[in-house]
Image 1 (cartoon, rainbow, N blue to C red):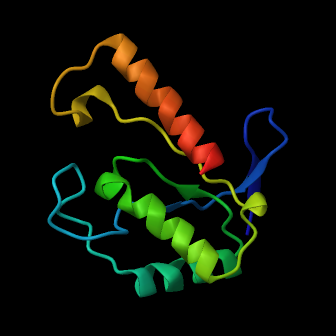
Image 2 (cartoon, rainbow, N blue to C red):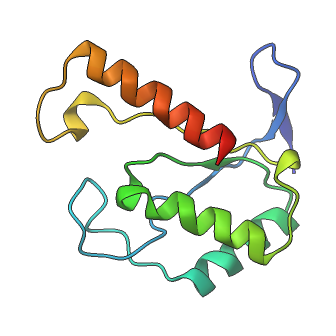
Length: 122
Protein backbone atom coordinates (compact mmCIF):
# COMPACT_ATOMS: atom_id res chain seq x y z
CA UNK A 1 0.00 0.00 0.00
CA UNK A 2 1.23 3.47 -0.83
CA UNK A 3 0.79 6.29 1.68
CA UNK A 4 0.67 10.06 1.31
CA UNK A 5 1.25 12.73 3.89
CA UNK A 6 -1.98 14.55 4.72
CA UNK A 7 -1.13 18.21 4.19
CA UNK A 8 1.60 19.26 6.60
CA UNK A 9 0.17 17.31 9.54
CA UNK A 10 2.76 14.54 9.62
CA UNK A 11 -0.07 12.03 9.30
CA UNK A 12 0.33 9.46 6.52
CA UNK A 13 -2.81 7.96 5.04
CA UNK A 14 -3.25 5.21 2.49
CA UNK A 15 -3.82 6.30 -1.09
CA UNK A 16 -6.94 4.15 -1.04
CA UNK A 17 -9.78 5.21 1.22
CA UNK A 18 -12.82 3.11 2.07
CA UNK A 19 -16.04 5.09 1.95
CA UNK A 20 -18.62 3.62 4.31
CA UNK A 21 -21.77 5.22 2.91
CA UNK A 22 -23.19 1.75 2.14
CA UNK A 23 -22.86 0.48 5.73
CA UNK A 24 -26.29 0.32 7.32
CA UNK A 25 -29.89 -0.49 6.52
CA UNK A 26 -31.48 0.36 3.20
CA UNK A 27 -34.67 2.32 2.81
CA UNK A 28 -33.86 5.22 5.13
CA UNK A 29 -34.34 8.81 4.06
CA UNK A 30 -31.27 10.68 2.91
CA UNK A 31 -28.84 10.86 0.07
CA UNK A 32 -27.72 7.24 0.49
CA UNK A 33 -31.09 5.48 0.68
CA UNK A 34 -30.67 3.78 -2.70
CA UNK A 35 -27.20 2.33 -2.12
CA UNK A 36 -27.14 1.39 1.57
CA UNK A 37 -28.02 -2.07 2.74
CA UNK A 38 -24.90 -3.69 4.18
CA UNK A 39 -25.15 -5.75 7.36
CA UNK A 40 -22.60 -5.86 10.20
CA UNK A 41 -20.99 -9.18 9.20
CA UNK A 42 -20.34 -7.91 5.68
CA UNK A 43 -19.01 -4.62 7.01
CA UNK A 44 -16.67 -6.49 9.39
CA UNK A 45 -15.34 -8.56 6.49
CA UNK A 46 -14.75 -5.53 4.26
CA UNK A 47 -13.02 -3.55 7.02
CA UNK A 48 -10.85 -6.55 7.90
CA UNK A 49 -9.78 -7.01 4.26
CA UNK A 50 -9.01 -3.30 3.89
CA UNK A 51 -6.89 -3.19 7.04
CA UNK A 52 -5.05 -6.36 5.96
CA UNK A 53 -4.29 -4.64 2.63
CA UNK A 54 -2.89 -1.60 4.44
CA UNK A 55 -5.84 0.80 4.19
CA UNK A 56 -5.82 3.15 7.16
CA UNK A 57 -8.19 5.81 5.83
CA UNK A 58 -11.97 5.46 6.14
CA UNK A 59 -14.37 8.13 4.88
CA UNK A 60 -17.26 8.77 7.26
CA UNK A 61 -20.01 11.33 7.76
CA UNK A 62 -22.83 11.42 10.24
CA UNK A 63 -25.34 11.81 7.40
CA UNK A 64 -24.51 8.38 5.93
CA UNK A 65 -27.48 6.18 6.85
CA UNK A 66 -28.31 8.70 9.57
CA UNK A 67 -25.13 7.88 11.51
CA UNK A 68 -25.55 4.11 11.36
CA UNK A 69 -22.55 3.71 9.05
CA UNK A 70 -20.24 5.32 11.63
CA UNK A 71 -21.62 3.08 14.38
CA UNK A 72 -21.09 0.02 12.17
CA UNK A 73 -17.49 1.02 11.41
CA UNK A 74 -16.86 1.45 15.13
CA UNK A 75 -18.41 -1.95 15.82
CA UNK A 76 -16.31 -3.55 13.06
CA UNK A 77 -13.14 -2.11 14.59
CA UNK A 78 -14.25 -3.34 18.02
CA UNK A 79 -15.09 -6.79 16.63
CA UNK A 80 -11.64 -6.94 15.03
CA UNK A 81 -9.97 -5.72 18.28
CA UNK A 82 -8.21 -3.02 16.24
CA UNK A 83 -6.39 -0.09 17.80
CA UNK A 84 -8.10 3.02 16.40
CA UNK A 85 -5.04 5.18 17.03
CA UNK A 86 -3.44 3.69 13.93
CA UNK A 87 -6.34 4.62 11.65
CA UNK A 88 -7.59 7.88 10.16
CA UNK A 89 -11.35 8.34 10.51
CA UNK A 90 -12.31 11.72 9.08
CA UNK A 91 -15.87 12.96 9.34
CA UNK A 92 -17.72 16.04 8.22
CA UNK A 93 -20.93 17.86 9.01
CA UNK A 94 -23.73 17.69 6.44
CA UNK A 95 -23.82 20.05 3.52
CA UNK A 96 -26.67 22.53 3.33
CA UNK A 97 -28.23 20.60 0.46
CA UNK A 98 -28.35 17.49 2.66
CA UNK A 99 -30.54 19.20 5.23
CA UNK A 100 -34.31 19.09 4.90
CA UNK A 101 -34.65 22.76 5.75
CA UNK A 102 -32.24 25.64 5.53
CA UNK A 103 -30.31 26.15 8.74
CA UNK A 104 -28.96 29.34 10.17
CA UNK A 105 -25.20 29.80 10.37
CA UNK A 106 -25.40 29.45 14.15
CA UNK A 107 -27.20 26.09 13.84
CA UNK A 108 -24.59 24.82 11.36
CA UNK A 109 -21.77 25.93 13.64
CA UNK A 110 -23.41 24.15 16.58
CA UNK A 111 -23.85 20.97 14.55
CA UNK A 112 -20.24 21.10 13.32
CA UNK A 113 -18.95 21.51 16.88
CA UNK A 114 -21.15 18.66 18.14
CA UNK A 115 -20.01 16.41 15.25
CA UNK A 116 -16.35 17.02 16.08
CA UNK A 117 -16.85 16.42 19.80
CA UNK A 118 -18.78 13.19 19.21
CA UNK A 119 -16.21 12.00 16.67
CA UNK A 120 -13.30 12.60 19.02
CA UNK A 121 -14.72 11.61 22.39
CA UNK A 122 -17.35 8.95 21.76
